[in-house]
Image 1: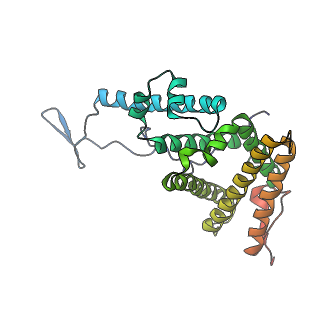
Image 2 (image 1 turned 90 degrees about the horizontal axis):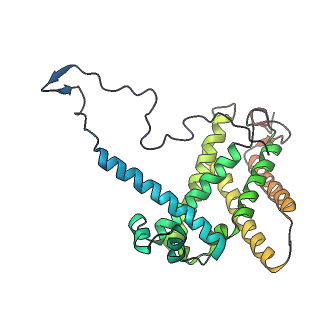
Length: 274
């Protein structure tokens, strides 16, 4: 599939920590005393280069360990251990624990990687201006199932692993789902033509969709372990697309709105009383 890159509003994807924020001017220098600029704001603190390099190093090492976790999950399965991941990374387990506080911390990083991977794949595969809602939904389902098919054990791990048996860890997966639901709600609200958009309502239906998709994925992965091709990929994509569309349509009707799935986002919504 040829990727179609789209411009994403800056308020949807906040700038990463450490990036320069556009439009924020540096403090103006009024006078100089003993070689230090005097400003109306707090004195400028010099960044310790060694501290910054160490921070960047830690970020990079964490990324490499998450990469190794994906490889270990693909090979070993959802019951992967911290030792398996450290071995795959070519490091001793104590080093892994120096960069991740515990299993929960690593679990969180894996969940975040999957979330970001899905967002990137979907948003670079659609044209939010011209694609119809039906096309958007089907493309999103296609990209999602492609990731699940490429890393089935990663999804089994997130759903059933011993890493997530504790309540705190299970709640983290729900928090990630809620964050994604809110992110998607604000994103789509920004694309719609009216300013009177109920972001909370969109968040609710998105959260419902995420739950339905997760449950269907759990079934699909389990069924395909018991039977050969219990549901082929193409049919599962179609099932998810139909389920997502049905939930969205039901939510719209509940709020007195109709959706024409054959139209793009900007013109697909209208009041049921119109």
